[in-house]
Image 1 (cartoon, one colour):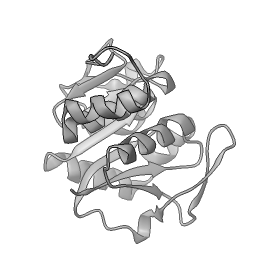
Image 2 (cartoon, helix red, strand yellow):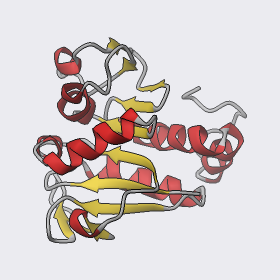
Image 3 (cartoon, helix red, strand yellow):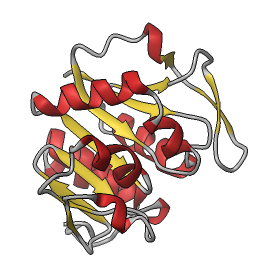
Image 4 (cartoon, helix red, strand yellow):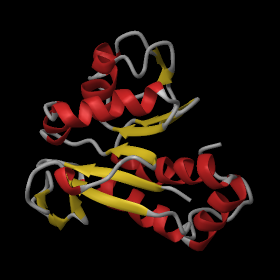
Length: 191
Protein backbone atom coordinates (compact mmCIF):
# COMPACT_ATOMS: atom_id res chain seq x y z
CA UNK A 1 0.00 0.00 0.00
CA UNK A 2 1.23 3.47 -0.83
CA UNK A 3 1.91 6.15 1.75
CA UNK A 4 -0.58 8.90 2.54
CA UNK A 5 0.45 12.36 3.67
CA UNK A 6 -1.30 14.77 6.03
CA UNK A 7 0.00 18.33 5.89
CA UNK A 8 0.48 20.47 8.99
CA UNK A 9 0.74 24.26 8.95
CA UNK A 10 0.81 26.59 11.93
CA UNK A 11 -2.77 27.16 13.02
CA UNK A 12 -4.09 23.73 11.95
CA UNK A 13 -7.17 22.30 13.68
CA UNK A 14 -5.73 19.63 15.97
CA UNK A 15 -8.73 17.29 16.15
CA UNK A 16 -9.10 17.28 12.37
CA UNK A 17 -5.48 16.27 11.89
CA UNK A 18 -4.78 13.90 14.75
CA UNK A 19 -8.04 11.95 14.69
CA UNK A 20 -7.55 11.24 10.97
CA UNK A 21 -3.97 10.04 11.54
CA UNK A 22 -5.13 7.88 14.46
CA UNK A 23 -7.99 6.32 12.47
CA UNK A 24 -5.83 5.60 9.44
CA UNK A 25 -3.14 3.98 11.58
CA UNK A 26 -5.80 1.85 13.32
CA UNK A 27 -6.69 0.65 9.81
CA UNK A 28 -3.01 -0.22 9.17
CA UNK A 29 -2.66 2.51 6.57
CA UNK A 30 0.73 4.14 6.17
CA UNK A 31 0.29 7.85 6.89
CA UNK A 32 3.02 10.43 7.39
CA UNK A 33 2.47 13.87 8.91
CA UNK A 34 4.34 16.57 7.00
CA UNK A 35 5.18 20.06 8.21
CA UNK A 36 5.02 22.57 5.38
CA UNK A 37 7.80 24.59 7.04
CA UNK A 38 11.43 23.67 7.65
CA UNK A 39 10.66 22.73 11.27
CA UNK A 40 8.95 19.51 12.38
CA UNK A 41 7.30 21.22 15.37
CA UNK A 42 3.99 22.76 14.30
CA UNK A 43 1.65 24.83 16.49
CA UNK A 44 -2.02 23.93 16.33
CA UNK A 45 -4.83 26.48 16.37
CA UNK A 46 -5.45 25.80 20.06
CA UNK A 47 -1.84 25.95 21.19
CA UNK A 48 -1.11 22.23 21.00
CA UNK A 49 2.36 21.64 19.54
CA UNK A 50 2.66 18.60 17.29
CA UNK A 51 5.87 17.01 16.06
CA UNK A 52 5.47 16.14 12.37
CA UNK A 53 7.07 12.99 10.98
CA UNK A 54 8.76 14.92 8.18
CA UNK A 55 9.17 18.33 6.57
CA UNK A 56 7.89 19.09 3.09
CA UNK A 57 11.31 19.67 1.48
CA UNK A 58 12.60 16.27 2.65
CA UNK A 59 9.57 14.19 1.63
CA UNK A 60 9.13 12.06 -1.48
CA UNK A 61 5.49 12.24 -2.61
CA UNK A 62 5.93 10.19 -5.80
CA UNK A 63 3.97 7.17 -4.51
CA UNK A 64 1.32 9.07 -2.56
CA UNK A 65 -2.07 7.48 -2.06
CA UNK A 66 -3.79 10.33 -0.17
CA UNK A 67 -2.92 14.00 0.26
CA UNK A 68 -4.87 15.22 3.31
CA UNK A 69 -5.50 18.76 4.51
CA UNK A 70 -6.83 19.55 7.98
CA UNK A 71 -8.57 22.87 8.44
CA UNK A 72 -8.28 25.49 11.11
CA UNK A 73 -7.36 29.12 10.78
CA UNK A 74 -4.86 30.34 9.92
CA UNK A 75 -3.83 26.75 9.12
CA UNK A 76 -5.84 26.53 5.91
CA UNK A 77 -4.57 29.92 4.75
CA UNK A 78 -1.01 28.83 5.46
CA UNK A 79 -1.52 25.64 3.45
CA UNK A 80 -2.90 27.65 0.53
CA UNK A 81 0.12 29.95 0.64
CA UNK A 82 2.57 27.04 0.14
CA UNK A 83 3.03 27.09 -3.65
CA UNK A 84 4.81 23.72 -3.73
CA UNK A 85 1.89 22.09 -1.90
CA UNK A 86 -0.61 23.64 -4.31
CA UNK A 87 1.42 22.34 -7.28
CA UNK A 88 1.54 18.88 -5.68
CA UNK A 89 -2.24 18.88 -5.11
CA UNK A 90 -2.94 19.90 -8.71
CA UNK A 91 -0.61 17.25 -10.13
CA UNK A 92 -2.01 14.54 -7.84
CA UNK A 93 -5.57 15.46 -8.81
CA UNK A 94 -4.70 15.52 -12.52
CA UNK A 95 -3.66 11.86 -12.33
CA UNK A 96 -6.76 10.89 -10.31
CA UNK A 97 -4.92 10.75 -6.98
CA UNK A 98 -6.94 10.80 -3.77
CA UNK A 99 -7.30 14.12 -1.93
CA UNK A 100 -9.13 14.86 1.31
CA UNK A 101 -9.76 18.21 3.00
CA UNK A 102 -11.82 19.28 5.99
CA UNK A 103 -13.18 22.49 7.54
CA UNK A 104 -11.91 25.63 5.78
CA UNK A 105 -9.42 23.76 3.56
CA UNK A 106 -11.89 22.66 0.86
CA UNK A 107 -12.81 26.31 0.24
CA UNK A 108 -9.49 27.99 1.02
CA UNK A 109 -7.10 25.47 -0.59
CA UNK A 110 -8.87 23.10 -3.01
CA UNK A 111 -11.53 25.30 -4.64
CA UNK A 112 -9.10 27.97 -5.90
CA UNK A 113 -7.05 25.18 -7.53
CA UNK A 114 -10.10 23.91 -9.43
CA UNK A 115 -9.96 20.55 -7.65
CA UNK A 116 -13.60 20.80 -6.54
CA UNK A 117 -15.02 21.90 -9.89
CA UNK A 118 -18.31 20.09 -10.62
CA UNK A 119 -17.91 17.87 -7.52
CA UNK A 120 -20.07 17.52 -4.43
CA UNK A 121 -18.19 19.24 -1.60
CA UNK A 122 -18.73 20.62 1.87
CA UNK A 123 -16.81 22.96 4.13
CA UNK A 124 -16.97 24.88 7.39
CA UNK A 125 -20.12 27.05 7.62
CA UNK A 126 -19.44 30.55 6.34
CA UNK A 127 -16.96 29.42 3.66
CA UNK A 128 -19.57 28.06 1.22
CA UNK A 129 -19.30 31.03 -1.16
CA UNK A 130 -15.62 30.23 -1.65
CA UNK A 131 -16.34 26.69 -2.90
CA UNK A 132 -16.31 27.98 -6.46
CA UNK A 133 -17.77 25.68 -9.09
CA UNK A 134 -18.47 22.80 -6.74
CA UNK A 135 -21.91 21.50 -5.82
CA UNK A 136 -22.56 22.23 -2.15
CA UNK A 137 -23.37 19.12 -0.11
CA UNK A 138 -25.41 19.41 3.06
CA UNK A 139 -23.78 16.27 4.47
CA UNK A 140 -20.95 16.57 7.03
CA UNK A 141 -18.76 14.39 4.77
CA UNK A 142 -18.95 14.44 0.97
CA UNK A 143 -17.31 11.76 -1.18
CA UNK A 144 -16.94 12.75 -4.84
CA UNK A 145 -14.75 10.47 -6.91
CA UNK A 146 -11.15 10.94 -5.81
CA UNK A 147 -11.98 13.78 -3.36
CA UNK A 148 -13.42 13.68 0.15
CA UNK A 149 -14.40 16.86 1.99
CA UNK A 150 -15.84 17.42 5.44
CA UNK A 151 -17.32 20.38 7.27
CA UNK A 152 -15.45 20.65 10.56
CA UNK A 153 -14.20 19.21 13.85
CA UNK A 154 -17.37 17.26 14.66
CA UNK A 155 -17.03 15.42 11.35
CA UNK A 156 -13.34 14.52 11.83
CA UNK A 157 -14.01 10.93 12.86
CA UNK A 158 -16.45 10.31 9.99
CA UNK A 159 -13.97 12.00 7.64
CA UNK A 160 -11.17 9.64 8.72
CA UNK A 161 -13.44 6.62 8.44
CA UNK A 162 -14.54 7.70 4.94
CA UNK A 163 -10.88 7.82 3.89
CA UNK A 164 -10.40 4.28 5.24
CA UNK A 165 -13.56 3.10 3.46
CA UNK A 166 -12.40 4.57 0.14
CA UNK A 167 -9.02 2.84 0.41
CA UNK A 168 -9.72 -0.43 2.21
CA UNK A 169 -13.47 -0.88 1.89
CA UNK A 170 -16.47 -0.36 4.13
CA UNK A 171 -15.77 -3.51 6.18
CA UNK A 172 -12.34 -2.18 7.22
CA UNK A 173 -13.86 1.18 8.09
CA UNK A 174 -16.63 -0.50 10.08
CA UNK A 175 -14.08 -2.62 11.98
CA UNK A 176 -12.14 0.50 13.01
CA UNK A 177 -15.35 2.29 14.01
CA UNK A 178 -16.49 -0.67 16.09
CA UNK A 179 -13.11 -0.85 17.81
CA UNK A 180 -13.53 2.81 18.72
CA UNK A 181 -17.05 2.09 20.08
CA UNK A 182 -18.39 4.64 17.65
CA UNK A 183 -21.76 3.01 17.21
CA UNK A 184 -23.57 -0.09 18.29
CA UNK A 185 -25.48 -0.84 15.09
CA UNK A 186 -23.88 -2.46 12.05
CA UNK A 187 -24.39 0.67 9.91
CA UNK A 188 -21.98 3.62 10.38
CA UNK A 189 -23.63 7.03 10.63
CA UNK A 190 -21.78 8.51 7.66
CA UNK A 191 -22.94 6.11 4.95
